[in-house]
Image 1 (cartoon, rainbow, N blue to C red):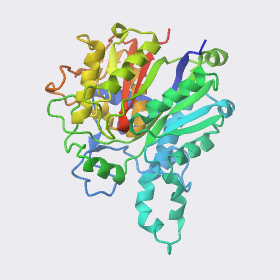
Image 2: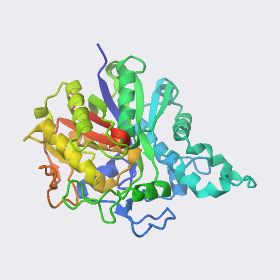
Image 3: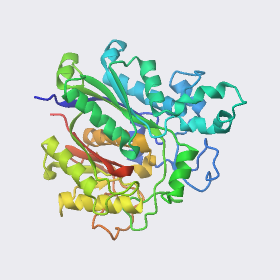
Image 4: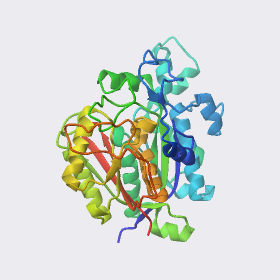
Length: 403
């Protein structure tokens, strides 16, 4: 019989906080971090709001314990900070890590730093320290540097499937545990804001110049964000051997690729519906046992209409409480799945439902209304967390209360 997979640690840094507790406090206070960028040199600086981690890259290096280390990009440093909190949260020691796996996600790797020296890099007559950043463009560069820094060594992998990347990283880590390949895997993702990403989404006309409004009739696109998050996954056998504290169970998961369009979801939510349905079936829970859905909820016209229809197809007239937390953190792309998986654990642990900020009127395409209130002392046993990426890459996780 396959092992159950438990979550025993988590670490997080986003624009609303430098660790899990600071993020929880901001969620409770309903404090969004959207605003102008302070660290990116872009013509959109005062036009397109973003959710940016407030520290400079040099400050992040100090926080990560790596000041002055050449070649550590902002992406790597965000990841290191979240990783160290996750390891500490799980009570792991240096002796545990050589046998641990690491599945990391990133969409553009170290683009945040290489784009600053792009014209130097392509000039064959130029030499300098900027050449150290060429390899950081590889999404696996930050993975290897974080693994080297922490001593994780059993299995190292990088996943890049756009906005579903770190949800897929969690899925892959869970599969390695269920198939007996690992007993311990740290999974998640890291993403830094870049001019490349801002310009790219802006050219797709997917960025709102105002604060995003998921599931609202007047939604007009997303706001980008940055951050990193990792969850420690352990097999049931390993939890018993180590006497580890269990935060929640990753009871179900599914990736369903609808292959409808390179950048648009199926209008009827085919991929989202299949991902949620099959993840729930794997968890052994029924639709009546889901109390909260942390939706992908980007606030783009196509995503929210598609996801709303998928919710109606799965739950009928009994759609549970749902909300998008992206108005707090921005859309952190590869890191979003892991960040929202941690928010799902917090919803269970704290018995809370987080509000869908900026919503005022129901959209026309689907008869669903997100929760706009902060609900405390609300019984949450099972949460579905959705992360949907370009190319129809749809991932759903079911996170359950430990019993």
